[in-house]
Image 1 (cartoon, one colour):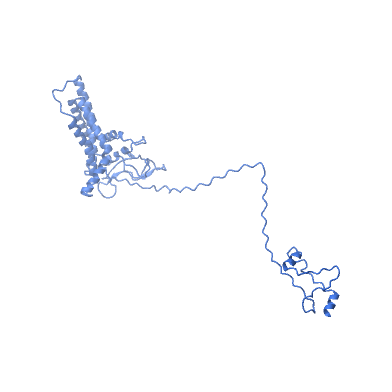
Image 2: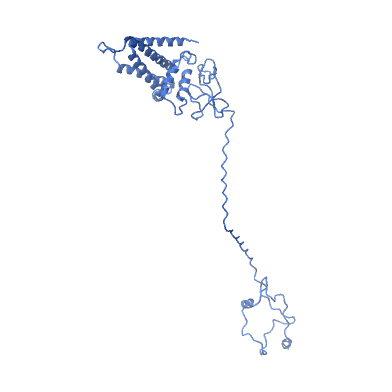
Length: 370
């Protein structure tokens, strides 16, 4: 459907093509290329310059100045301000002293009309991008998804050719991260970017949005491919241009997927099995078991000499005159020597521990009684 903006775009392009017919091929081509260069620089650098301007405005004027005004001012300075300076400083009006060229006048005019048409597309596209940055008049801004001749997207695509991401597949600054499907396990969940024009806290038909998945309606649950891996959908310049908002007022409801379980932490790796040792050629002899410690046996007490019944004490000393073949000890042996001379049994007891003492000789008993 043709809108009023489509008619205005066609009229502006025809007017600039006629101007190119008047000035010729060289002048129209140079002006178109200079404008394209200024718009490309503005598209790539306006965010960085806007951040510096916004910080300066906050320091001087406080928080009353919104970020959208800084973005509009930065883009206007880099695009239209730079283009005006180039035209004023590097070009002079034509004079009669300029030498004539060998170009056919009709060809020069036709070439100028073509170059003017090209310059008109760039000029009108830059104007549409600038209007989309204005922080007011949300209901009167042109919508790129509703226009038949959306030359604003054409200018953005041409300018972002110099700002390609390392992936090479898709220009993230221009298009943002693409839509995906729910069946993809690595897809993240968000909503299509939209601007709350009526300020009621929810999406209504009066609000503007960017139709990322091409469904024709606002998608509340939009699954997208997280290319940069930060968990949030990167909003591209096309999204901002269509929604008519370039600051943080552009809403995207990034949230975790409810249908995916939380990842289970990985289990610790099991130790690697020890490889079996090769069998040696000679068998290892078995080691003898260590000897068990023998418990210490108590030392038996020395046996007391038995006293025969009817005697007043121990047996008397041997007779003073021993008989032939008998030996009289010169001194009593020590107690340790007696223990050492006595034979031991298996349990450490003396050999005669359980025997009764022999009765004294008959003659000895008689001498004692006497």
